[in-house]
Length: 315
Image (tube, rainbow, N blue to C red; front, side, top):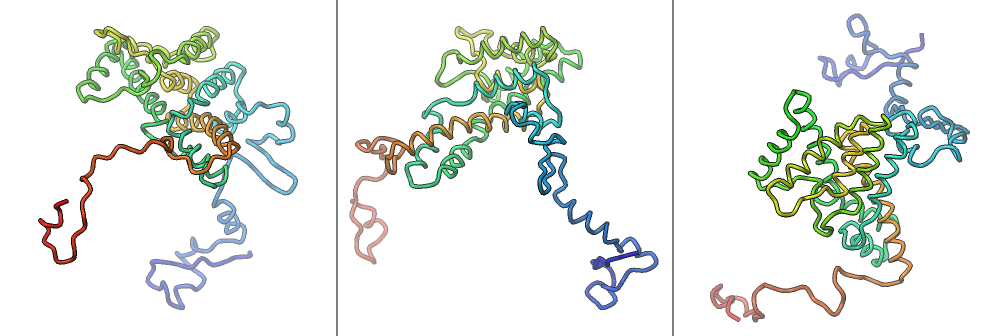
């Protein structure tokens, strides 16, 4: 049989002539056939997502030439992430969430950052990366965090705890810690205009048996708990509404954030391209006639070397 020898490491003879000799006896496990070695090499980046060979591109087993013109981009996202194509109801719900999150104007830090980068002579890909890299725990991450909260409430309900009581307990815990509950309230919108249509689609999907409704029940229970005792309610925002959709569709929280990045990346690209075409150069965060407020020391002279520290600090 054709064999190749693996160098032994960590044994008594490692690093010596005997340590690299063909293994025998109890060391036979160290000997690999050529086929086994090839499998280890080609298996280094083993993947079930795609197979690319000369003249062939398979995506989860489907030839790409069959998908082109027949499978939507939304369905392709689902296929690559989940392994199978979605049904029509799942696809429609996912697409609605992706459309809803696509843009929120230059007041969104990710979009502002991309626009500024586009005026600094970098490539469009750099400007887009600059914007997307702004999406973290505070800006862009509330959807993932809300999905985790929804899962926590669902876990409590599965243990027989009343869902409204579990939501009220969670709100109380967050208030005690003076923490913000992700997915609720909006710094810009009194009521996020994306909430109602998205939740309406989830309600329809529940009626049609596309999704089970557990995340919708948890999210609305949390919304009721937040409104209790307040003169103004704290309605769900885009992060909360899409968290419900992604949870209902079976995506884990980390992918909820990833899907938001895919969606918002389109808006980032559009704004970076618009700024690039405008031809402006080096646009900062505020217009040129304005300067950032300063609250440092008053103007002072730098005294000659050898001056005492007390004297140096006097203006």
